[in-house]
Length: 612
Ligand SMILES: Nc1nc2c(ncn2[C@@H]2O[C@H](COP(=O)(O)OP(=O)(O)OP(=O)(O)O)[C@@H](O)[C@H]2O)c(=O)[nH]1
Image 1 (tube, rainbow, N blue to C red):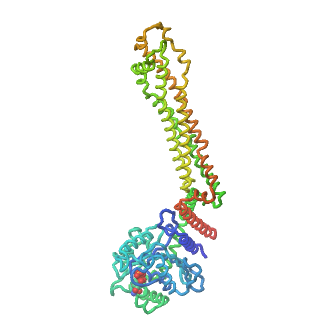
Image 2 (image 1 turned 90 degrees about the horizontal axis):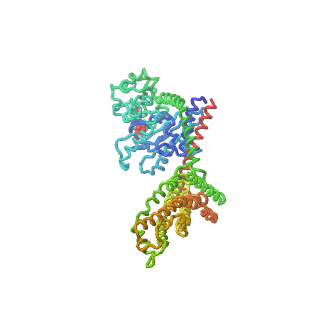
Image 3 (image 1 turned 60 degrees about the horizontal axis):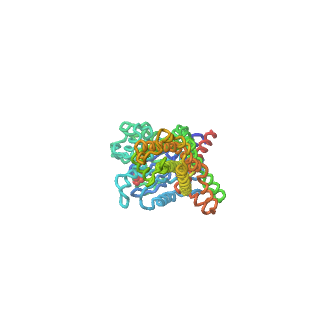
């Protein structure tokens, strides 16, 4: 086998692998190799003589005939030249069965079409693959597509016209397809469906081979030389004229050998086409197509190979991300669950410790939010002279204190200190919300968890629950810090206060003197100073308490409770936790299958390269 021959064989094998592994283009969510394989695509309008040309190239009758749209699935026809021996055909969907009776091949094509399209006369993009082994063929792969049509017939949906055109277009617009455009000579070439489509997708005509059928049916006195000699429709490759069997020949079962002989005679004896004999007829067509396809494949191999390598990398990467299939025994499952939890915990911690953003928002709470809230507390109102007077007088009751208003001080201070509860609780809540948000973020960012929606939800719930508990602890702790400040006042502060009588106050002053503005103002300012001193303590100690109770605790034991629960679970419950998203499972299978295809294709190409 020469390298050239083996190249078509190579593409044939890759094409078969594609069909087996479900790659026939179309599905855009997976990379496709099918789309990039060089092939010869046969297009033509209804009754243009498409089937006749194909059969003539093969030298056998094997295509379904009939009225209406007979070809309803792409037929990938792989011709393998053998060194003698019997001719036979094989379908990819029935491996190992050799068809030597070609009328059975025809029947199988019909049946297999119906198997997929369900006799509904719909079309389907899933190809049928047929290989023909014969000493009388050239190595060639042709894809036969439904004939272009203008109207739907009885029992076929109106959309079929557009469906067919779209399917045909999807094949011919690929840069790696050679277009075999069939037009009948007894029709104006300007109206040919095949040429219209070919011109649209291949305007320069480098991928198009024009075939003119039914030369024998042209009106007497006319000929197709303008077309065949490239004057009326220029293509990069020369036009080929053919003469196939007429309907009458088919009815009389004129065999293919006789038909080919008659075709040769037609050209050699033709007054019009005699000078073109060596470049006309179906045998010549088959030869130049084979040669062209080989060269075409050879030129495309490097780019196909690089596409294959690139895609293999991509698929491997995606499969890596999708992770290995779930383990079956419960020990391994438990291990997987713990691993997944750890992965999440890691991501969460990196948000707090830096590396990932979010942790700094906690510092913002301490540095901005808390001081701002403290500043806003209404001490001015609480310690206004009117309020000081009111509180002091009420505390004194009917018997004013004689030296200093002990009770009044006490009440004014207590009344101010409770105000710290609000900002303390607000800090607890604000940090809680930051942590909760970080849990949500970390859940989303733990790629490994994405596969397991159930586990993902449970881990998230467990983490949030743990945060709630920390919040409760922290709230109690912080409020206690505030309350502690009113339980016992800082003695030094008051000891340092100048006593009123030291400043010349008169201990025997009348009760009315005790309620003078200057006296009350002094009380107010003393209390204010004390409260600001406490405020500073609070500003410093609340963040410590919050970090201690919430942040540090979350880092240390966010999932502890969850671990305990998981540890108690039985095999079945563990499996439920590792319940994978079905879409993901499908994706993994599909990617793995595609990866197999690409690897097989690479091996095929390698083997041909080594064999050279
Ligand atoms: N005389 C003559 N008849 C031809 C020639 N080519 C095809 N025919 C006849 O034209 C009719 C249509 O040919 P087919 O080969 O079935 O055409 P097709 O494009 O496959 O048609 P559909 O698949 O039905 O769209 C048949 O009756 C053929 O016998 C030709 O070169 N000369």
